[in-house]
Length: 94
Image 1 (cartoon, helix red, strand yellow):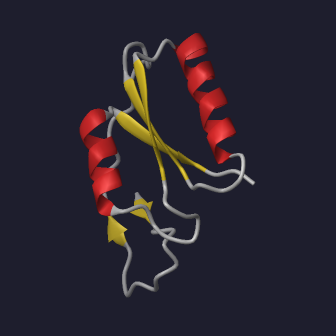
Image 2 (cartoon, rainbow, N blue to C red):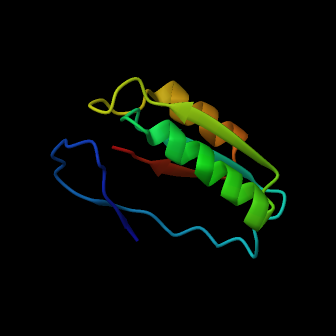
């Protein structure tokens, strides 16, 4: 798997990372959601969290909002989400 950074910074080489195994289901899992702070991203995030709870029976949804859409999320935001979540989804709105 090749992981590309959406930060817009040129890198000399792409890092290869082994893919993690998929979950059999999401029952009881903790989902981390990171929105990019664009208009309506919070509304999209709220609706998505509701659907995850209703349809996939996730245990909990943890959310964080970036300071601005133009900046990457601070490392402490990402570390906090990673420590609290089984997996993280990053979304955007406009």
